[in-house]
Length: 368
Image (tube, rainbow, N blue to C red; front, side):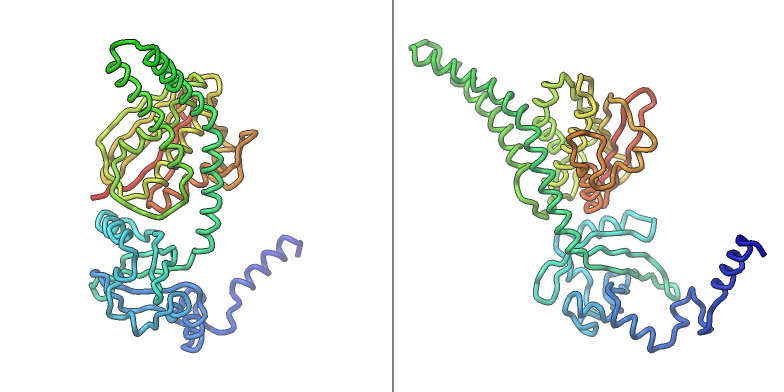
């Protein structure tokens, strides 16, 4: 018997090895003491709810993670333990989807009222013709803290990179203001016209600085109904000066003004990262097309650039942390975009254009 045949034979023996006599693919075949041990020592919460959200079963791990006894929560509404911002998101998703299982990021209240960030996988099944939701939830609070640290780091990096362009953009209205003040000081007539222009110039400065401060604000989970046009327009206003410095034109093709239940700060950070990424691909000028539309229950935003495009070997790695093709890049931008979309039950697709450049497509569920 040669070495290859020997290895094949050993694999067959390992696959057939089952001294207990239990079906290795069936949890139900395990003895009661083993099932009890798994239930008491598992790190995830297993739960079953009926179609109305009433809890019919939860594993004892809920006591370790959230402080509740299983008998306390059985018979109560699962929605009572969710943050109020997550309830409409969950309902919208359940009413609109036909694909199971679904993955959610949820904020759960423990027995002390503390918010615990959890990731849940939920599926719709039936028992004797009655529909039930079956799910597994795990505590991802530590992971979320690390993500927020990286998120803040990337936000400050973006603010620093935009500073030069914003300073240039603010200097122009300041020069105008200085000139008008000198004219007024010299006693020129028609002051009312100059006052109006000065107010407009001050408003330009206020808009730009407000958006820059918005980037630098601490991260806070606060989902509210927001319109996509307003958020995209704010981001374009912020990045306009940087685009002009690089001789890049930004066009905005508007579709239906979709309403999203989202964290405004995070969604704007998402589009800042995507558009800034497109700008960095075109240091010698070009055009960025932002195309927004609504497809079914999703709002689609395409950021289309005219850069060199993305090679196949790079495409698969772009969303990985700290992977970057740029000399001064952090490698966190697209990873943060993916995380933001995950939290909002959205998705990011990266496509190569037929002629040149790339398309970064963000899909977000609309608020019904």
